[in-house]
Each structure stands twice: as structure tokens, then as C-alpha cells.
Length: 413
Image 1 (spheres, rainbow, N blue to C red):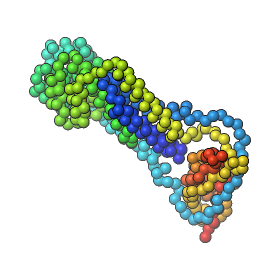
Image 2 (cartoon, rainbow, N blue to C red):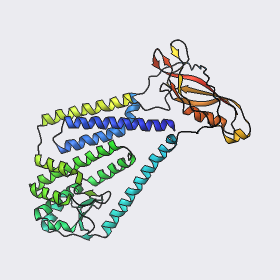
Image 3 (tube, rainbow, N blue to C red):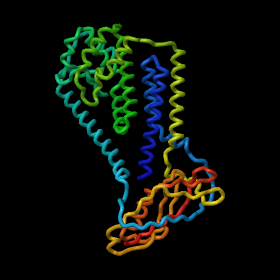
Image 4 (spheres, rainbow, N blue to C red):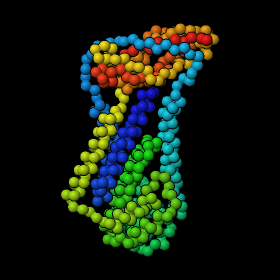
């Protein structure tokens, strides 16, 4: 359990380092094309997901053969009562799982909501010009009216639907067509499927603000790509900007539906449409290469500086002497004297065998000499030792794994 919690924290830190470096790199080496930014942020998110595998490759220890030498070190304590384990260690994994379940349930409710909206919507007939645009862009799309939506939203894969608010008819015809073209481009690009995958990633990392921010950059870049395609298809910017402004102040859209615009993205999208810069292919290639170097360097640096702990790795275990020094205790937790053992008037010593890792954390704890395996004193000693922390043993000044014995004495006062 402790190893899992530690790796969750380390992995979260790795993601934070990678995404922070990616954000700094994106601010310095600004990619002028929205589709290049979309590809970049997708690579960053995928790279974040692959960090554990990269860490496993980069931090695989070199194979070595060394005899397992056992040294002895004793820590005697007298105790009556103490808490069994850290509440943080017990409840963090449960909290993470509950968060995933809760957000998964929220998304499931969102899917049911979309199904309800679809079932209670009415077919929309928007004229021959829109029909020609639909057949040329996304023939499988279906336009439908619904009074509860306040801006156009798109969802579905096999039977994609574009739900339209009645207030769309209040816009000029050219702005209406620009808004409809935006939704049809989403359908043609199968963006709803991408969004569903991103929502799944966001659910798994519900606790990580950096991952949410990176996924937000993916969404913004995708919308800017669609903006560029719409302007190319319609040949006009002002009607499209008018449609964006008209729907920017609307309420939140249903969960899992791709909205026409998010309020927080308005300024970025308007600025990108107004700028409309492309840059030379050479400049784009140089910027992309620079970003790749920054991102790869940050990722490799993160997994090297913050390696995940490996339960199955078998580093060399040393004994004192020949440059090896024993670990020393820096945090000691007293074991719990169980009520059953007190009533049985049990006293004595439990001898534990463990390896103090180079991180200072004891592992591979076993009972070398039992005192009580009925009323829980042996297990209490193990649970206490799991919470001990050591200044690790060293060999030639470098922290190494050392095999030690820890002796815990239970005495009734």
C-alpha cells in the first residue's frame, strides 16, 4: 500500500514537471498554426500517460550479482498504545477510486441526458443551402431543434446529432450558416470521439490540475483548428465572429456534448481568428523541433530525478564493513499493543527482518522470531515498522539497500 501511494505521488509530480515544461516551451516557442498546437498538446498528454513506462526503461537497474549479507541492528522500545497506521495511507487510494467512480457516474448521467435531449428534439429543416453544406461536409449529421439548449451542441458517432437552439434563427443568415458549418466540421472530423477519450483521461486524473489544464489546451486548439476550417470554407470571418459572440454568454452545455463555444475560450479564439498568421514552413519546423526537445528533455529529466519505486526490482543488498555503513532511525513509530494481548498479559520481543532501501523506507518485512501470532503483536510490530523512516545506509558515500534486523519489545507497565 505504501509503495502504491508513493508511486502515485511521484507519478503526479512527473506529470506536473512535464506539463509545466511544455507550457513554458509553448509560451516561448509559439506555434503559429492551430493544428500544430493541437498535435503538440496531444503529444504532451500521451507523453504524460506513458511516463510510467518511460520511467521503467530509464531507471531499470543494471544487473549485478552479489551475495545477500545480513547485518544486525536492534531498536528496543516499550509501548502500550499507538495508532496503527497513517489515515493518509489508508484513505488516499480509496479517495482516488471514489473520485474516479463519482466522475464516471457523472459522465454516465451526462450520456443519459444527451439521450433524453435527442429523444425529445424535433427535426430541423434549414433550407437548401444548409442541405448542400451538410451533404458536402458531413452527410451523416442530423440537425434537430431543442428548446433547452442555448447554443449549438454536437454529439454521437454512428448517428451524430447537432442540437440547435431556436435563438439561432435570430442571427443573420450568414452567421447561421457559419455556426452550422462549425458543427458539421466537428462531425466530419469525429471530434466527439476524441472528446470522449479526453473525458476518460480526465476522469482517471480527476485529482490532477495540470492534466486538466493540458486537456483544456487540447480542446482550445481543436476549436481553433475548426475555426480556421470554417473560415476557409465560408470565406468570411465577420459572420463567424458574430455567431461566436452571440453564443458566448450562454449557460453551460450538457455534459459530454461538444459546445459551439466555451466562455473561457472566447478571447483566445477571437484573437486567433483576427491574427490568422501561418508562418513559413521552415519556421514552423524549427519551432516544432525546439518544443520537442524541451518536452522530451523535461520528460526524461522528470523520470530520472523522480523514479517510480519498483516492487519487483532486486538491487544489491549490502552488509556493514568495506565502506558500508548501517542506516540510522530518523522516524520511529511505536506499535499498537492490542487489547487482546494486554488481557492475555503477553510480553516479550518480536524480531523483524527487513531491508532498509536507499530511499530510507523499510521493505520486505518478515517476522524472524515471533512473539504472538494470535493476538496481533507480530502484525502490530510489522505495521509500526512500515512507518519507520531511516537515514539510509551508504557504501562509499552513496545510499544503498542494507538488510537489517529490528527488535521490538512489548512490556506491560
